[in-house]
Image (cartoon, rainbow, N blue to C red; front, side, top):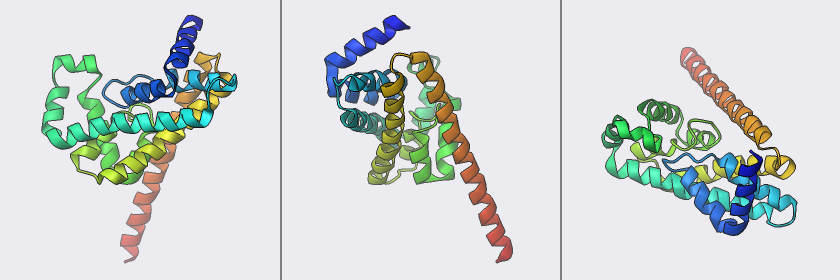
Length: 206
């Protein structure tokens, strides 16, 4: 793990902010490169005065928008049937694309469009796929970009804070990033359930 951290620090230092932008674009596409391996090492360099924390978060957010936009456009142009057809192929596992994951992301999104796009960027297992159902239903692209950027930036800021203070302990970062992600999932579920019961109560009253 120490060797991996050292290599990541060297890679981040060499590539700079454009490297963060590119890697986060990859992380938000069909190839789920863990963002925990991109932002925290850069933030650790920021703690040593070698990079700027604000620019790290900004470029991470912009990169996420680019990668998510790739999925969005692909789903919007090719359509739902084609993407699901690809997901059913045996070789789809090599690009980390599973039908069950797509169904989960689509259900998650359709329950609440904008907030699903926003919170989806904060939830493990949904983060890099939430843009696909957005493309399926042809969500307004400007709204998609805004909510994707906001969610991605908040997630990147959380990772940056973990990397800034605990950059040398990658296991700690992975463990707590996962916990934080599931906290956001819990918040989203509670919010959806609350909205459901509020609407049901209003219908009964009316």
